[in-house]
Length: 318
Image (cartoon, rainbow, N blue to C red; front, side, top):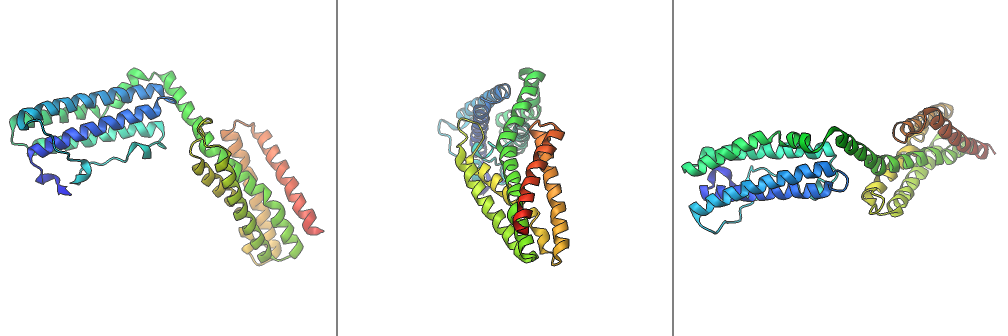
């Protein structure tokens, strides 16, 4: 890698050309990725990609006048301290507002690059073009907002926000809630049955940990293999599987940890209190994200948990 201050004017122009091309492709890729779910914002990024293409054309014209037809390949990653951006495929998980903010950051970074390059240039025409582009990029720090106002009216923005919320529910909340419910409810029976059958906190803890981890692995694989997300829009299967598996394990571990308390009935009391909190959290998530009426959510979850808890008590007492 070379330091930015070591670059010649020819190399700085070549770097600026590559920078504009890469930014334009990032915007175009973002537009393509947003086209299905956020068509209004996708149009914004198409226009921004077009502007980067115009900047690149101006830089190439000046380069040809000064240095000829051959433009050396100088990339950002070849210059120490130069601006860097993660590939678009790593940006797919960003929310719509984060993507818009990414555009503003890219414009600000490019502006700083042009100002530094113009300050180092001794050629008047090169310094003028770089300075002009720096001013354009300074104005473009607000380009995303300006284009957004022109192309994405309030009602479309509301629709995009709703679409993002639906995808968040599909890809995160649903698998997480399924895991939390399974881990919190299904492990009640083995944990409390073993606790009452043995009267020993440590035995109950071991059974609870085994049931929780086993259920987490099982639910994680089941969620990941249920569908690949290509038709349902539920996202990457391995991500859903990890979320579901972790939440399943967490749901079971919550009321298992109290059995680390050596005094048996104290451990039982704390574990029961934790169960009540877990069922309350599940009811809240169902109300907050799944549009289930709060009373209905509490009754459904409470009734199911009570049945499983009673099953464990009956088996353990027998």
